[in-house]
Image (cartoon, one colour):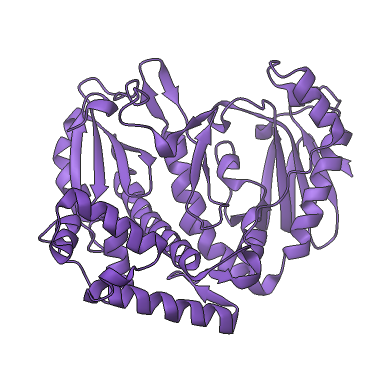
Length: 407
């Protein structure tokens, strides 16, 4: 193992593992305590000590990097400090094979410091570098168990599809009456639908009624918060999957309510039961749900015979990766994965469109996008609406000065 403090680091294929200094700060306002670089081909280990109390401290701008390929532990956070070409999230290498994230493998020393000095800023700077390296090596070895050059093309595709778009949203932050807050998306979930929790706040489930949205405002003088909500998103996605498209000139829930012969309010509950709990006998005569039931049966048959089914993007949902799986759970896993892949596609387009503009995409929550719109760019909203509806899923637009009061 070699400590490096300056100069150029040139390698072919590497595993990079940053250790962040502060365990409470978001990566946007954090710094590295050290950077570990492992040459996958030669086994050479390099350590760049940036903030740790051990010797050999340096600064990132004292070094340059030249890698053919780099697999980074938590690349999404790494991008806040270093932008390198040909980098990929190391966690995807394991996740795409077994549907689980890489383990952090903290040592007892880490547990002691994080418990004893919980409120101390930059506590990871106090933990000996040898303990950080001990922890990193375990995660690195786990990564190497799954590293397979034949599957790397798949990893690269999903890295561009998931990591980059969500990094941009996190980087934008959400403005509040007390300044910026930052979100943290986790894609390593059962279905790949990201969770979004940071510092005790679940940004994927901000309640409309309990006041948790009251603090969110625009960062711009005269700016507006604008949210686009997809109409009956899951029923419309399912309609695409089964070849029974719900018309775009009517609300999806109104369309289904007419099929049931009940009110819109009652229809939502019925739809929920059919799509997430299995189609009930009393609704099997409706062509839409007859096709849903048939689709679920075919999906389950493929899953049990082949050992997997694929999402539209080609991610395998493998039988061996799920406990207590049944046909309805499988259908819901595929539905949420399909929803996520459609959203990532839209978010990528939206980020590209906004890249040279002041308006920011600040939050994504499954069937909606929240934007912080500059007052001089209100006229962009029609173009944005067209962009996010390009796949044929209609949306409604809400606007206001405070997130809890958008209309």
